[in-house]
Amino acid sequence: MSLRRVLVANRGEIACRVMRTLRARGLESAAVFSEADADAPHVRLADRAQLIGPAPAPLSYLDADKVLAAARDMGCDAVHPGYGFLSENAAFAEACADAGMTFIGPPVAAIRAMGDKAQARRAALDAGVSPVPGYAGDDDDGILAREAERIGYPVLVKAALGGGGKGMRLVEGAGGLADAIRAARREAQAAFGDGSLLLERYVHPARHIEVQLLADTHGRAIPVLERECSLQRRHQKVVEECPSSAIDDPLRERLGDAAARLALAVGYIGAGTVEFLVEEDGSFWFLEMNTRLQVEHGVTEMVTGEDLVAWQLRIADGEALDLPTPVTPRGWAVEARVYAEDPSAGFLPQAGTITHLALPTGPGVRVDVGVRGGQEITPHYDPMLMKVLAHGSDRVAATGRLRAALEDLHLLGPKTNVGYLLDVLASDAWTTGQTFTHTLEADGVASTSADGVPPEVLMLAAWGLEMRRRPESTDAARGDVYSAFDRLSGFRIVPRGGDA
Image (tube, rainbow, N blue to C red; front, side):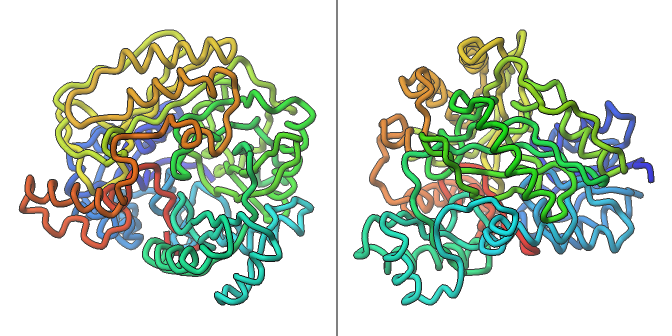
């Protein structure tokens, strides 16, 4: 088998990033686009492109039939899903195989095994990897109440499917459980089409550490360092780094071994990420596995010199991994996600035209961008505009380069979170490396003038303003949980296991 033309079933920066690796490897790229993206950078970059529907994602990028029809029309022999949208949709991966196209991702069975959090917990236990203490079974309200008492408060009520913080509630005591269950179930049903819930002990304080994996068709799974993603706002990652200042070589080996065992146990192939919560004493708990490329994969590439997308293509083409083990970091890399959002208004997503865009450059600086000057940012998709990454000899050097790069980023048009990112990088928590999952909100870095305003009020206000500005778009995102205006911020992890 040899790949020739690959459909990138995505948009924005990840579509552009995949296409650049395709070009470097001498492969042709094909793009799909919605009416809102007719002149978007990923369309311009592709060798060929096809319109697949109107702006709302369920009518275009999330319509698997339309995406596959376009792939057939453009003569593609493979599909790369990027992240989000259909990337963790087992039914889509299966449909690609049925259509005779290579799905550049893991086997269908692995997607299904890891897409359901309850099933993933059982798989981890079977592989000898301890999940976060909790409960995943019959989710009758009474049973959940009994299990919460057994686990001990505080507990997290979580959606069994999907992610990105949707369907998740922290419960401090028994008095708040019933309301949390109702709210989480309602939100999970709306976002993922399934209101199933599970419980987990709230591990606090903890670091969010993820292990990058590559696994080939020859039975080899290699951990490719860890990334720290602890700095989060409302369960959404803000700044990521590789490696983690809290992980020494023995702990790195233990984490990598656990991740590889789990991957081999579920027959994983390709690039994937196993996420853990790590406590201060070095104990760690399995959280979930993302069966796709991660948003923050670039920091791993910068400290290893490896192109993870190229490895996805090589593995899909049957090549064996030839990486040296253990993989050792060369320097340090840090990434900041730049969003069209207003931190002074509760991180409200912003829409509008980018009237001017000048990107930072310089040694060790990388910008993965999916927008251009003159482009209109609409409320139909996630508001992430780009990722700014920096590499240096150590954490201090990488941070300095990232701060300089963010200061050199000039974007006129929608408001962005760049000032907030600079505040985070200047905070005592970042400087000292004391970064935990609760750090941003506990330390007040995430506070804004709109704190205390219910998210629903902010979203309704934003939607009303946008519709007054564009009266022709009244139905553009109604009922679309994938619209940027359906939540305040952060990358949406769309539903898994066949409904993403």
